[in-house]
Structure formats: structure tokens, C-alpha cells
Image (cartoon, rainbow, N blue to C red; front, side, top):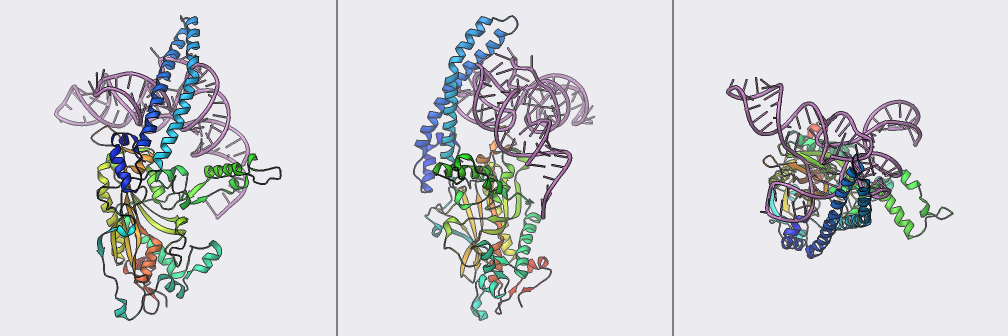
Amino acid sequence: MHDLKWIRENPQSFDAGLKRRGLEPMSPAILKLDEERRANTGALQDMQARRNAASKEIGKAKGKGGDPEKAEALIAEVAGLKEKIAAGEKREREMDEQLKSVLAAIPNLLQADVPDGPDESANVELRKWGHPRNFEKEGFEPKQHFELGEALKLMDFEAAAKMSGARFTVLKGGLARLERALGQFMLDVQTGEHGYTEVSPPILVRDHAMFGTAQLPKFEEDQFWAISGELLSTKSEDEVDEAGTLVGEIAYLNLVTRLREGRLSLVPTAEVPLTNLVRESILAEADLPLRFTALTPCFRAEAGAAGRDTRGMIRQHQFYKVEMVSITAAGQSEAEHGRMTGCAEEILKRLDLPYRVVVLCSGDTGFASRRTHDIEVWLPGQDAYREISSCSNCGDFQARRMQARYRPAESKDIQFVHTLNGSGLAVGRTLIAVMENYQQKDGGIRVPEALRPYMGGIERIGA
RNA sequence: GGAGAGGUGCUAGAGUGGUUGAAUAGGCCGGUCUCGAAAACCGGAGUACGGGUAACCGUACCGAGGGUUCGAAUCCCUCCCUCUCCGCCA
């Protein structure tokens, strides 16, 4: 969410920022709304001031030694204001609502050093680490993770599809354990070595939490929603005819409204609950930065991804992820961004998985982010680098949406905190990377050294 | 699910519908005292929006949203949340 006052003072910068996002100028429309709203509010406040003054006098006039006739006269005078004030208040609510809904749908502005470009092809590589294994030299063709997993009979897509449909996987035995080991390993590194506080948060959250991190209002379709059975079984009167059948468009809209009001979201990432930990609070600067991490399941509808990555477990409706969230003072977020990216990279280094870091271009950077680093891990089975982590600096964009502020040490002006989030890492995709990079000619999978303590000393998965 | 009690500032906790943005205590900040600290004493301090160069002024905010009233922290309605007892439940 953007600062209206800033837009008022810097309309040209604002529109220039939107242009980088491929958006038309919006400041004229916003400022027009803003002006109308302020005019209305000004007039309203004058009336309220008059009413308050008169009411105070009425109180005195009615009290001991007062003048009852004067009170009557004042009451009559103020009564005339009543309707106007009510109308002004209603108008104020409407305009606030309108302005808020416009602002809520505008993406964050990009940091100046983000490269311009239309899509992921314009992302810029920052660095590369490690050397992909030479399978040719070893005399075999690397397989994809699902080929390996199915051959080992430890990865079952059919069983998952029977109970849950596409984009779900059943892991068994060594692979199930490997997944668990990865989660524990990552959490231990981020908490034990990088100073993140482990959190076990709710993974069902209300709409306002989703609004805070900016999944709402724009990305409703990408989420899964949990609805209590009670909500589904109760029909309100205007939704059904005499026979109890749902009828008509209004009925449909009523139903949707009711479902929206009662639903919870299955979080698409622990970024949502971790960042909302500081919502509506005023922190002391001395307490910053706050660093939180959590291992949670993540749920994604993958609405716009039909047909993409359908084989295997690259793109699932449900997966585990270790998420990192940092809450910093205003001047500190860029440094923290670099640090956080390093914390994610460290996991790959420990696992000895080759990767590269790219900075996303303007066209590929997410809605809430000012600047995003993606870490892409080498997948020999796919012969490609694939995203395994995404670290974003959101600046004060989310903080403003959730009223998360801090009191600077050297000033009494309260400011919005900066928020950052990053995967450290996506567990499912790390599992894939381990499988493909550590596969053996016979289809077995060597367990990376770093994970062996978490695997009861097992050195390989498969015969 | 049934019955009940509550949500007030950083915290605890008052608050007959009318100078209550809010008593009081603790905490916090500043000062006096002290070599320094503690104690004691004095003073200060909410958030947002709008107006003003500024001092400052106005408006809103006592869980959220509506309503009654000339006037609401106080009365009414809806919702959210917390707590106690009972029931059900991993």
C-alpha cells in the first residue's frame, strides 16, 4: 500500500514508478479522489466542531444555574446540522473505501537498481556457485526426480491423485524421511547459525492477514480457502426458494459474500503468518531487526499454471517450506536483503548443490516487492536451473497495509517498519535437487553429508 | 454446542449520557538531589487525518462496525476476541 501523502507530493515519481511496472499513470485519478475526500472531510469537521461546541454549551445551560431557554435554542440549531453531518460521514466512509480499494490494488514501486524487462528472460544473473556434475564422464544420463522416485517405489503420484487429484505426491520410506531431514536441517541452520527465531504459526489465517502481506485483494484465485462445514450447510432465506433450492444471481452473490466472510485461507507461504506477527504494533528500534523462521506446509491453487510442470513434484498444491522473515528499521532493509539471500544460499552450499542467484527484472518482480533475488538450483535431470528460493524486500509496503511501525531511537516520529521474506528453502524442490544431483548410475540416491545426522546415518536411499 | 463474565492508554485499573483524550498506580522520558546510583520530589508523554512557516488549532479514535441522542467510553444492535463452567473432540 502506498502513502497517499507521498503520492500527493510526488505524483510524477509515482507515475514513473508505475510505468516501470507496465502501468498507466494513476496519480491524476487518485489525487482527484483525494481532493474530493479532503474537501468533504474539511466541511464535515467544521460542522462537527460547531456541533461539539454547541453541545458543550447545552450541557452548561442545562446544568445548575443554567438557562433552559438558551439550551432549547441551541438544541434546535444543532438539530439542523444533524442530517448534514450524517450525510458527510456517510460520504467520508464511501470515499475512504473507494480510495483504499484503488490503493490496495497498486503494486509496490521498484528499487532503482532493479533491471527493466518484460519477463523472466530479462532477469540478471548476480553470481553462480558450484559445478554441475559431469554425468557424461560418469557414463550415464541423469534422470529426472520422478523417474528416480517411481523406480525406487518411494514416490507415488497415482496414489496421491486417487485421493487428492493432480499436483499432489505421496512420499514413502527414505524419501519421506529425506523430506523431513531437509526441513529439520534448514531450520537448524537458520535458527542456530543465522539468528532466526523459530516460530510455529497458524497456517489458516483471516482475510485481513492476507491483505496485510498483499495476497488480497488481487490474488484471491491463487489461494486455497478453508470453509467450516457449518457455513456450507446453513442457507439463508434469500438464497433459496420454497423447495430449498438455491436461486438467482443475487442469491449467488449473497452466498459468495457469506463464504468470504466466514472463510480462512490456507497460507501460500509462512511469510503470511510470520510477517503478520508484528501487525498493528509499535516496536522499539532497539528490538529490530526481528528475524523469524518457520517450517510449514504451503498451499497454492496454481490457478494460472495449468499445463506447466505437470510431471513430478516441482509444482504442487501442497509443499513444505522453511520461510525466513525479517522486520527491520527503514534504513536497514537493503543490507538485510543481502544477508537473507546469503542465509538461503548457505543451505545449498552445505548440501553442495550448484546454484545461481538472479535479480528479477521489473516485469517479473512480485506485487509486494521492491526487489527480489531468486536462487535457482541446478537440476541435471532437467538440464536447467530452477527456482528454489525467492528473497524479497517489501520496504514499508506490507507494513503500511498491516500498521506495523516502530519508534526510532533518535526521534519521536513513528515510522513503518520494513519487511522482508525469503525461502530458506522450499523443501520439496530441495528434495528434487538432492535426488537429481546425488543420483547414482543404479538409480540409488546418495545422502548428502550434511543430512546424514538427520537420516540416522543412512548414506544412501535405494538398494 | 449450552450457561455465564469480560474487552478502556506501555501495563494494571477507575469511569452517575454533558469541560473525560480519559482518574489513580506502576513503568517510561526529562529535571532536582547525589561523586554516581537508588529513594524522594517536580515535570512530561497516545495514535491517525486535516489546516498552519511555526507556536498551535480542528476532527476522529476507549475490541470492530452500525444505531439512539443536541451530546456516547457510558444506552441499543451486529460481529470479533478473551476468560470460567458443562458437553463434544485430535
